[in-house]
Image 1 (cartoon, rainbow, N blue to C red):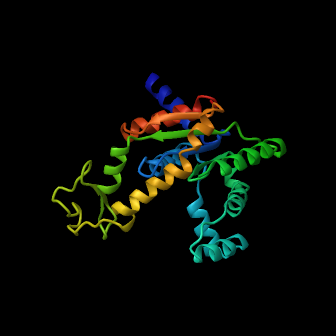
Image 2 (cartoon, one colour; image 1 turned 120 degrees about the vertical axis):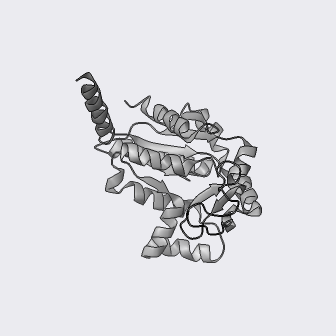
Image 3 (tube, one colour; image 1 turned 30 degrees about the horizontal axis):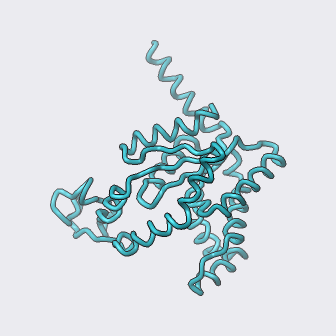
Length: 245
């Protein structure tokens, strides 16, 4: 009977998490830190959407929105989409109904300028909303550089079923061969050493400055991303729920 009561309590807790006002959560970390994996865990636990600027750009372009048309013209010239346009897309997305209890921002902000815009946006939302969000939580997933390099350069993908392997951490039973269908594994263009080196340099030059920006305001939680996926997820849950539940 006690076990049943404990189980019911856990079920109630999970249900409660999906109705609570979680507010905005920012995931920081370099390529290969596992932000995408952890964002999915947060979506499942709290029932709030993951918002990626890359997805926003693609969606607006595909739907032919005014913002999407402006972004497409800039991207087709090989230029970077300016902050003003990106922030406008983010503002429109945060106004949608599924964000009423909060959201997970993955890949935004990328710069201190975008972070300052977001601070102003959130302050206005708190002042104007009937259901204001709790304060922003920022989590930085910290991974040692050599570990990142092996995570990214070691990745191999099955072109048939999409299964992902890593020659260092999760190798196929037969080298370069999918365990499931026997297809030859491939290295995606995004996983080439040149592309990875460029992505890491861009992170260092543009986004790494967000860490001290959020640390000095007392909003930053740093998590050791070299631990197992499950341990990182648990630490992430604790960081978010500490001030909210």
